Amino acid sequence: MKNKSEKEMTISSVEEDDWEKILKAVLAGNRDGLDYNLLRRLFSHPMVQTILPFLRLQVVKERAYGNSWKKRGDVGVLYTVARKWDRMEQIITNAMQKGEVTEKGNINLKKSTGDYETFLDTIGDMGNYMFLWVEWFAERYPEERQKMIMKIMEMK
Image 1 (cartoon, rainbow, N blue to C red):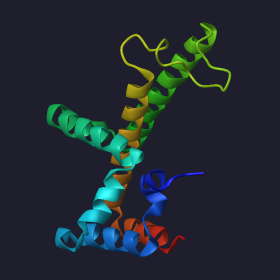
Image 2: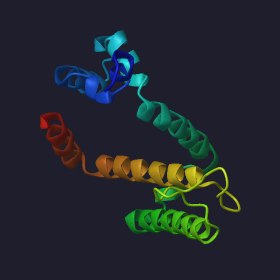
Image 3: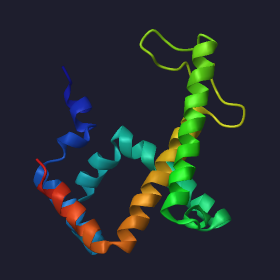
C-alpha cells in the first residue's frame, strides 16, 4: 500500500479538474492561470522528470541539426524510428546471447550497452522522434490536434 508521500508522486493524484486547468492554461499560453503547488506535484512525477532531460536533449540537437529529421517527410521519420527500433532489438539480442537478461526479462543495463550508445539513449532518441512526429503532424493538421486534445480531456 502506498503511503502519502508516494501518492503525491503520482500523476494520477492530480485531479481531473486540475488536469483540465493545466491543459487549458498551457494551450492558451496563460501561465498565470497555473497553480504553483499543482505544478510542483506534477513536476515531481518520475515520468515528467524523465521527459524533461530528453526535451533538453532535443533542444541541443535542434540547434546542431535543425529540422533535418523531417526533411524526407513522414516516410523518412518512420524510417528513422525504425532504425532506432532495430538498434534496440540488436542490443536486446546481444544481451540475451550474453546472458545479460534477468529472470523477469529485463536487460541488465549495467552490463549490456551498445557499441556507441546505451539502450536508454536509444529509447530516449526514439521517444523524442515520436514526440516530434506528433508535434509536426499536429502543426500540419491543427483540427486533428484539437480533436485529439478534446478526446484526451474527456477521458476519465
